[in-house]
Image (cartoon, rainbow, N blue to C red; front, side, top):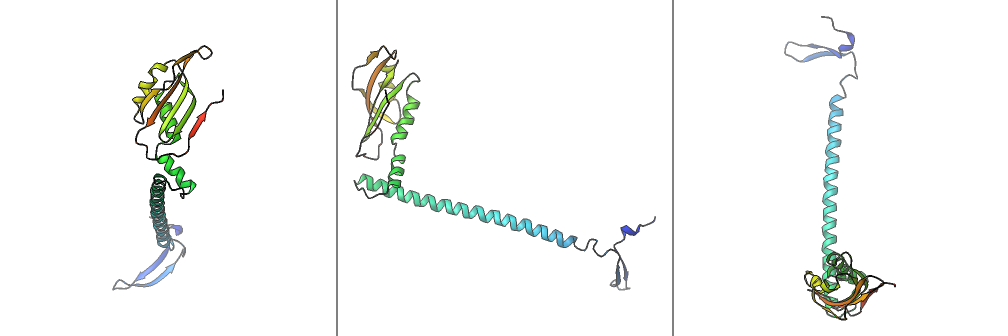
Length: 195
């Protein structure tokens, strides 16, 4: 079996005790850097893995700190709004309103609870009390529907149900309260459709 010159990397002579006495490099670059390159690649992968883990830990730490800070500010804002103080920042006031079933939460619950053929022309909120007006083909059942909502209670008609020939539906006006409202809203908030 013949060995081609390209298959020989080096020639070595061993002494009787097994030590290398002489080494002749035929291809000096062959395999010389392979162990070093493998170590470098492993070390780069380990560095990359450590950087990713460290980045995730820093991100989690930052998010936890931010959440704790917002919770503290939210509690302060709620306390200041409940105590009637007006020193809380506008941002914290909005956070507090969002956390306590504010205007958007009421709007969301109404869109879920009311029948599809019902539409509102007016929605007013004042200190946990909500007044709505609009048109529906099921106007007589709306009080019962609203009372079944986990967010509303004490729904009552505040005006007679009146058929509207133009809309082909009944006009209604209903007042109800928010359950578990934490904030007393000093100013009236409202929305009215342009007719």
